[in-house]
Length: 192
Image 1 (spheres, one colour):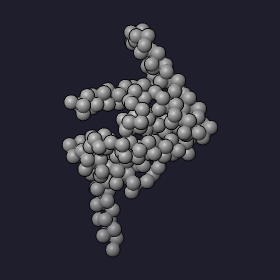
Image 2 (image 1 turned 90 degrees about the vertical axis):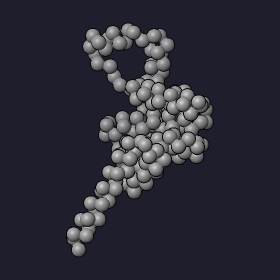
Image 3 (image 1 turned 180 degrees about the horizontal axis):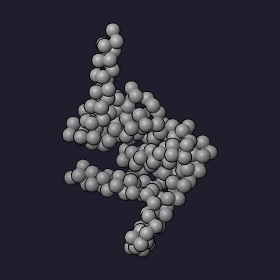
Image 4 (image 1 turned 90 degrees about the horizontal axis):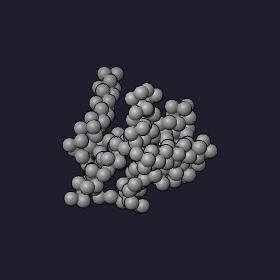
């Protein structure tokens, strides 16, 4: 029961997090969407956007600890929990994406490295296989996308696939690296 309650809240939190930073289109539909928000929802969204802006400012100064702190303050999970650490790492991943799009590769790498620290701590604090798989998958993405560390990405994706064999996304990512390795071995064999 606790696991299903956590999964429901966790999933809802992930969906909310994914939608937090999207900018509504300036259309009649977008305007009606904004007017249908409750004052509490509008305030929460404004608070989350403010935290993201504060995190971007801290990142611009090179203070990724302050950026993480600003983002962690928005978490809904209990203080010190693996879920809170994971949620913060996801927000840091969004920050890395923003920095990368803005042409700040070094900032994106620093945000990704900070996110990986949160993920490592989250992994230490949980025994939940699904959460550990999500942590490993997120780590694989950060290693691959922002740090260019293919070996660590491959290890993380394989761990995610082993922890959650039914997770098609984790299996697909692990399989992609297996195919790449097989192709590299085949090419090396042909070169001989």
